[in-house]
Figure 1 (cartoon, one colour):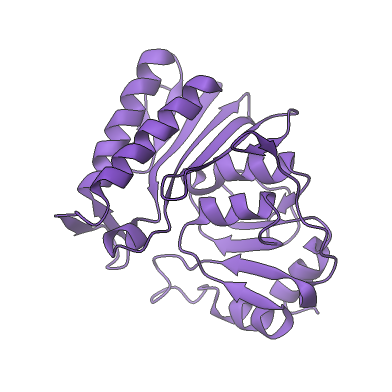
Figure 2 (cartoon, one colour; figure 1 turned 90 degrees about the vertical axis):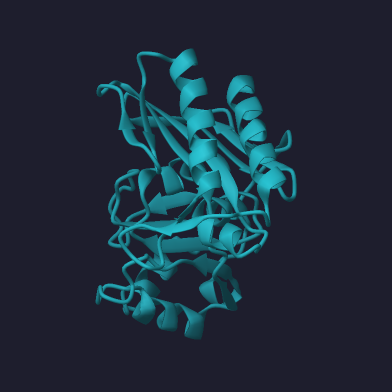
Length: 255
């Protein structure tokens, strides 16, 4: 854990040093899907360090996809979660590193370099923020809940764009936030700052590390239809547990 925490802090320092100095922004498949030279530089830093330390492990990163052969040990790496925010000088972004061992998330770290907040979790050992134990909130109903969401890059062309779900939850919840960095949103669920987060189309590097934070802080994760969540789930719903069933009903138009 200490090695991964140190690596996340090093990556975060690189993000912080180059913040508001982005010189080159490129588009991926969609005009709303951005990548900067910082994404690639941090990706190189993380992947090289993990490859040296764990040469037999598979590394799946946003900028490099799968690295090395399939393995029972997989690292999910997001070098810059919240790239659009970062490219615009909006200070909400993070680095996320998660380790999956034999199909189960075993370690997760999410580091917010702006606020110097390091969220970390190990399986069956709890979740922490800068060394302090985390616990999800006790809010029991959606109408008292502060929740967050996000929208996939293909939202303009895909009818399954989360717009209807957003409208339903907005009418029912106390309030809804859209931070633009899913790993941080889910870390905030673990910390009790948010009571829930839902989103369609998250990649494993977006949510794997933060999912362990939520689980170890006493929260609950599932697909939108209630099935068990995995890093490859099409929908991610993460809550404090108490509002989970009601939020699912709301998302599905059953409440």
